[in-house]
Image (cartoon, rainbow, N blue to C red; front, side):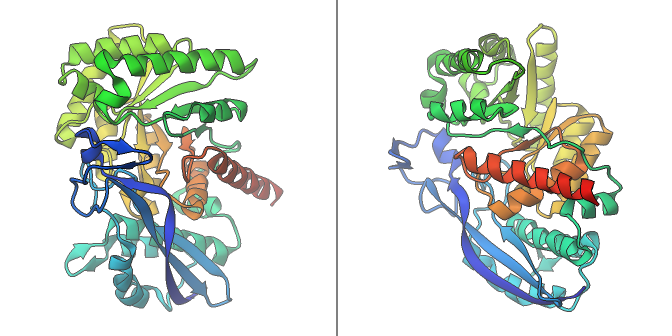
Length: 411
């Protein structure tokens, strides 16, 4: 099956881009937006709508494969590519990339995806957002050409065994919206609520009391509403603010994390990015030091790596070092989906926990394909997306996984 035409359109993402540096420096919030200017190059505002470049591959039999080019919320931070502007990158897709793909056979995913990953324009690699979106379209095209699911394409080309049950979901919602946590509990989301604690003063408070209180509130809410047979884990993403609060004093960080685990009890605590170092090597060492300190206690805490764990090489380095209990495969940061697949499989081989992450800034199309990857690679869990509304992502991902498994079982 050949690709006969490549078509582009601009679109909107499932959420927003946000200037993490400005937020951490105390940018003042007014309503949903901010009144202070951004500090990261490329941003017009501290928070602004995410942009998408939609890529459509028209196949010779009339079928159409879709992929969406986009970046993560906190783009341009911790080693990531700059803020993605769809219109600025459209010409390269409608020019050299179109020439590269049109007329090519799309029955296999890996060969063409590898070409896009290695493609150089004016001597530079394509923006991660472009590699992410184009590879989506190529995976979808391979599934259409073979009249099967994307999960089956991955299993066949990478030699994996597809999961037989839906992958557990990690819920995600804005921190102040407590009623959204209740939605997650009602829908029996396995891990919740992710949250976003990116500013020491507003999100953690003096001595971190706001975060401790939030964890205790979560634990009590789950206990009241969960009922029998449902015991979720509590996942908090703190974007390095605990390290910032305690000036990277590891003994103080470990002591605070222990208090946080006590507040979350009896539910397991998954803590993402407690500190952000200045380099990947320093981040790995900081995680190892915190892990060692926590291992000397009896606290039930799982450390989750995100910042500085962006690329396939980064993930392999974290996995080799045993620096965290779970690594996030943040698909848009890895570029082509082939890198996400390789990262998941590498972690499985290294016996390191791994989840198929991503961003609320994704779209329905990228989210659906991430569900296929999670199934085919047997990720430990899958982050809820797109958006931060809870219901939409739970519906999109759960239904896509259940449909896929039902189709495979019926063959």
